[in-house]
Length: 155
Figure (cartoon, helix red, strand yellow):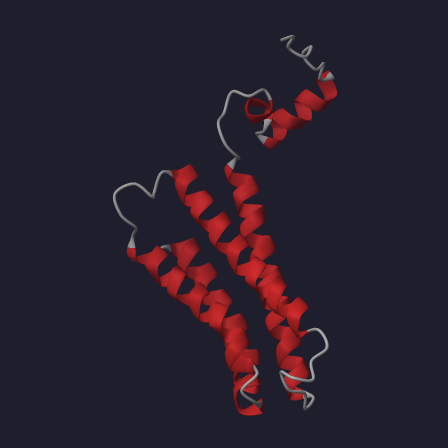
């Protein structure tokens, strides 16, 4: 079996990869994805989750129900994928930092509880306006709390 010829990488591209901290990864010297990619995956999931919850809240606040939402399946699918991306990115970052070995610190458990609560929030929103209105305020506050816990690691 013949191996493919090595790819020539222009110097300009190598300098850019080096500046981004990806040169070693691109050359195959590092196993797995870099920390920054996991962080982007995590943020993509967070943004998608907040958008889907906001869209569902707005539908209910305008008098809609679960049954008459024409985009209910799409919202549910994007919401589920968003929760998966949040967990994938979060645990990927933890693995890159070497935190996963030996048990999880308290701040990670708190973040898991927050993301699981936000994962179930889509079901709660459709229970009516009395739940959707407070969740419009609570969801961004919980996301802010999760960010503060990750940033300051108080426990």
